[in-house]
Length: 355
Image (cartoon, rainbow, N blue to C red; front, side, top):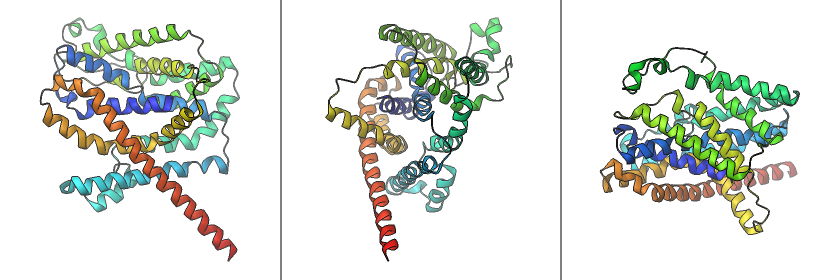
């Protein structure tokens, strides 16, 4: 459920990337709402990272563990081929066969494959992160996570000098300069921060009533959404460390949403529903990578059908659902092809050994 929800958040946050939101002045209720929603859906990638820690905290450096990366790379390769095929068929003027091949190594053939580049590195060091984490007491684990939060999340709210400049409050979007109150050299370590949070939540879930947890999510959404809207009001959307995956606001939201979803009782879910959820979950990686295809196709239609940016939010549920379904269907096909290729390879190996 968490993986599926994270994927839906990915498709949702890409609505703002592809609908023209970032090129439009933030003013009026519709744009302010979109600014707040955009900030909430940034929990997409952190949820995947937290889930990695939750599921992989006991993995050790061994052959069977590292062999798992081949499925990820296989789906990445097939998704990249699908993206290149789409470019060849529908955007041929921008297509380059050599560029597509080279893009496999620069993680650009599939436009959203930056996540794979990040995950490969995280995957390689996970067993060693586990050795470090699992050898600590609970107190030391808390301290470890606190230190990583200081390194990766705290700078997003502490290094905004405009807070101490009276003129900033009158026109927040004018100046985006920074003054470093805390070090920010290590901010790109945020995947490890989320990984350790996932490890900790596996051992020590946050004990909150579901209702309390939900209202905390709503509260943080309101505060962070209002802050992001205020940063940009009267100008195009102002991006900064406070609005990225590693931001302090997004970190809090991600932990609360993960904890809320993780504590949902699924004991009454039927066997068939469970099978469907497992299948959808297994397709989310490929769907994530392939969603750029359907983003390109459907958002071109949206921009033509609705030229007014403020009214495009009305199509948000429809286009997100359509892109998500199409991406999952294509991912199902890619996963079937991958399984078929693996089966054929195993058959060939078996025949070779016999002969």
